[in-house]
Amino acid sequence: AGAAGALKPCMGPMAVLSHTIKHGGYRSLYTGLSLPLGAQILYKATVFTINNITKEALVKLRTSHTDEERVQSYNLSLSDTFLCGALSGAINAFLFVTPIEFVRNQQIEQHTRAANKNNSPSSPSLPKNRASSLSAAGKARDVIYNTLQTHGISGLWRGAGVTVVRDGLGCGSFFVMFEIGKDFIAPLTSNGARDSFSVTLGAGALAGIGFWVAALPFDTTKTLIQTGKFDTFSETVLSSVTQDGVRKTIHRLFRGWQVALGRGAPAAAVTLGTYDFSFRFLKEL
Image 1 (cartoon, rainbow, N blue to C red):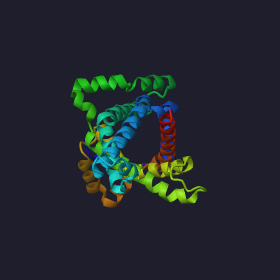
Image 2 (cartoon, helix red, strand yellow; image 1 turned 90 degrees about the vertical axis):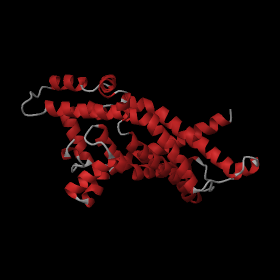
Image 3 (spheres, helix red, strand yellow; image 1 turned 45 degrees about the horizontal axis):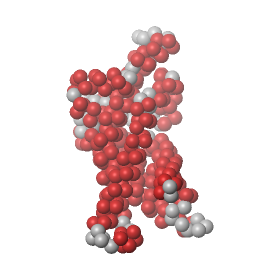
Image 4 (tube, helix red, strand yellow; image 1 turned 60 degrees about the horizontal axis):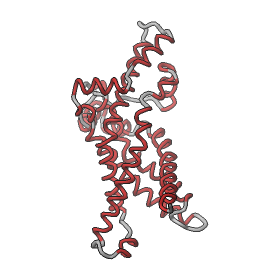
């Protein structure tokens, strides 16, 4: 891969939206959606389960395993919370997120190439032509089959390192910001309860912001790695620094922050609110 695939200057979110619809139609906004959408249940179940298991194990370790009353009242520090969250995010990233997002990114890349080809001056701009070629570009099963044939099963884990770092730091920050958010928001409510539903929603929104602030630079480079433009995080960043300097590189690592935070905050609020409600409901059964 050459420098052409580096962290190029990027249009704003609305310009990208307009360009995508113009050249690929509204359906192109949902390219590669089915696999990661179906995997969300698996992602969330894995992260929350491992986070709870590691927190319980850490509490018992710190309280010598014996004093049950002390175990129940023990509060983890923010560094402990970060550690448990990071571990859950890293394990989930390696087991499930990496191969699923690899397939999605390959689909988007193939869809983009097909859209550009159909909209080039030398290609006929027939809607039927465009629709047929775009629908044929990059079905999930074809991406998986071609990757296995070319690179073996390890090919599906391309970009595993940067994905593990992204979700490790992201999930660690997610759970830390959730705890900080509850401490900050609870005194502002009428009853001051940290575990109220409204506090959970507010803290959940802050958790989503915390995730993407930590994860976004790695998410940008992960996409470049998984689409074959670079092989490592350091190669991606060094190429951009060499070409354009540190300041522009930092700016480009965080491009798309408006969309990331705009979706991350409400999504996390809904996720944590639903989890909290479901957990309490099931616990009372």
